[in-house]
Amino acid sequence: MNLFDTDVQELKYHVLSEVAKLAYANEMTPQNLIDIAAVIVPDGGPKMRCCIYKERAIVGERVKLALGGDPGNKNVVEVLKIACDECPVDGISVTQSCRGCIAHRCMNVCPKGAISIVNCKATVDKSKCVECGRCLSACSYSAIVKITRPCVSACRSNAITIDFQNRKAAINQQKCISCGACVYQCPFGAISDKSFIVDAIKMIRTSDNNTNFKVYAIVAPSLASQYATIPDITTEKVITGIKRLGFHSVVEAALGADIVAYKEAEEFAERGFMTSSCCPAFVKYIQINHPKLAGFISHNDSPMTQMARVLKEMDPGCKTVFIGPCIAKKGERLREEIRDIVDCVLTFEELQAMFHAKDLDLALLEETPINNASFFGRIFARSGGLSTALAEALKEQNTGEEQCECRPVSCNGITECKTALLKAGKGVLKENFIEGMACEYGCIGGPACVSHSSKDKYLVDSFGQKAIEKTISGAISILNIAKKSNEKSFL
Image 1 (tube, helix red, strand yellow):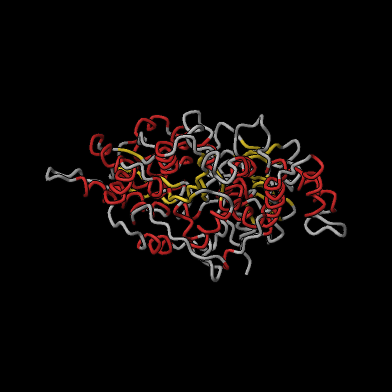
Image 2 (image 1 turned 180 degrees about the vertical axis):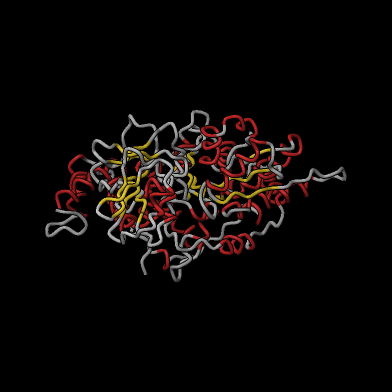
C-alpha cells in the first residue's frame, strides 16, 4: 500500500530522506549533497521528464529547498522554475467540439463582443475577452472551456500569477498566506515549501542525547489521522518512532489548544465578537484581505506557540520542534515574537523522511501512550473542533452568572472564511465567533499530510475519546500542578 498520494510527494520524500541521512551522520559536504541527484535519478532512461539531466537538475533544486531554500525569499513557499511545466494559459478557448450551430448563443451572450463566427465556427478575440464565463454556460455542446492552471485554481487568495514572458508561475508575496494549497495541487511539484529538517536534526545531534539541552517534539492532534490507511501503525507507535529519532519527549499541541480554548473563552466573554487565531493562514488572510476586521482577531497564541511557551517555562534552555500538517506554521514560526519560542517547524512529510533516514519501521515498534490533553484540545484538528472547545470552555467557566452566548460559524476552507468575513464586514453576520480554517476539513486536510485520502473527523474524535482528562479545566489543572511541583516527568 502506497504511503503517499502522488509521485510528487514520493519524490519530495526521497530527497528529504537523503538529506536527513547526511544530516544525522554529520556528512553534509557539498559533494555529498550534489550526489543526491544521482542517487534518486540513477543512470538509465528518464522516469518523469524529458531526460535524466533535467530530472537531476530538479532534484538539485529540491535539495536546496531541503536546506532552507532561497535566503533572500522570506516566503516559506517557493516556485521551482525549472520544474514548472509551463501549463497552458489560454484562458477561454473554443475546442474542436464546436459544431458550428446557427443559434450562436455564445456570441449573443458575450457582453464584450469577444466571440465571432469564422467559417461557421466560434472564435474568441483575446483582446476583448474578460473571461466572464457566460459563453461556457450558453454553449449547448460544452465546446467552450476555460483552462486554468492547477496552482492558480488552488490559490484562494489570488496570490499566484503567470509570468507571461516565460510562462512560469509566480507568487505575489503581498497576497500569499502560505496555506500551501498550491504545493499539493501542482501536478509537477513546481511549487514547494522550504524545509527546516536539517535544523531539527542539528538540534537533536548537538543536544548529545539530550544531555546538553532537551529537544521536545510538539505534535499536532491531526497526527491521529495520518496513518489510518496503513495496517499495524497506531498513533502510539508513531509517538515511539518520534522518540527514536532523538527527541527527549513528545508532547501534545492539543494541551496548548486546551489552554487557548480557556483563554479565548475569557476573551470572548469580554469582547462579544471575535475570530479565531489558531490558523496562521486564516489570520494572514484577514490581515491582507479584510484589514478592518484585523482588530477582532483573538489576541491568544496558537496552540503550537502556547505549548512551546509552557515547555520553555518548565524547562528553560530546551528546544521545541512542532510537527504537523501545516506549511503556514513555518511562516508563523518566523515571526519575530515567536522565533525564540518555537525553534523549528516540521511537517508530517518531513517526519516520515526522518523515519526513513533512521530506518524505522513504525509497524514493528511498541506503543507509547500520550496523555497531555483533553478531548476538546484534541478535536482542534478538524473543522468545528475549536468552536466546540470554546463552547465547552465557556460552560466550564460559568460561575452562576449569565453565560455569554457563543454563536459560532465554522469555516471549512478559505472560500467559507471569505463568505463569513464579507458578511461580518457588512454587519450582516448572524454569528459572533468565526472559526477560520484555511484547509478544507481543518488541519486533517493540511497540505503536508502524509496522506490526503483519510480526512475522517471521526478518527480525530476517536483519538480525543482516549484522553484521560474529559474536561479542559481538568487538563489545565494537571499541568498547573506539574508546574508548581516542577514535575518535568509530566513532559
